Length: 189
Image (cartoon, rainbow, N blue to C red; front, side):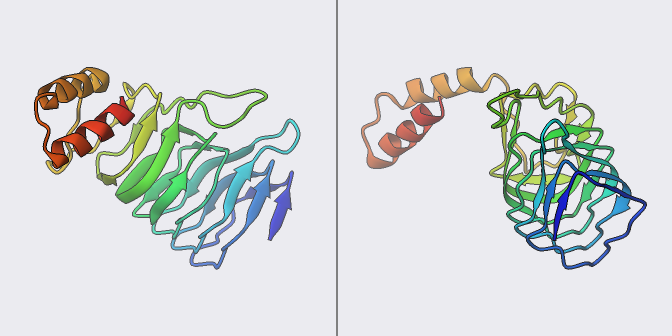
């Protein structure tokens, strides 16, 4: 299914097979994709001057593995959705909730828009009931984000300084594991 410059309002796609959908310049409001199969869908990209927006949309328990997206999400619920191998690129999030596992997901401050990049506000986004595995927040200010609260997460403040200290601590160790670890940390730095 391909959708261009249209509005979807008050619709239920609960449990629907939506693999490989493509949306450009679409407005989705007050709708639900609970348990839908959205694998490999392109959930939004601009079409001309019109962006794709999701307002008050429920993606809970949806299979969203390998989706691509350059859309704006406001007041959306991603509770226990299968979020894996996703680069949210130019997507923007405001007052959204994530619960369950996120694996290999990237959120950017500015995405891949070359013409007119729009900042991802990540404002009042709640990850407190989520488990983050290999999740990256690139260039984002996380002051208005609620991070996971479980003890299995380690939050490192001043990441650049922490990397520099770890590299310095490994400087005298020439063992293979120390060299590999130092190389990885230098790459991150």
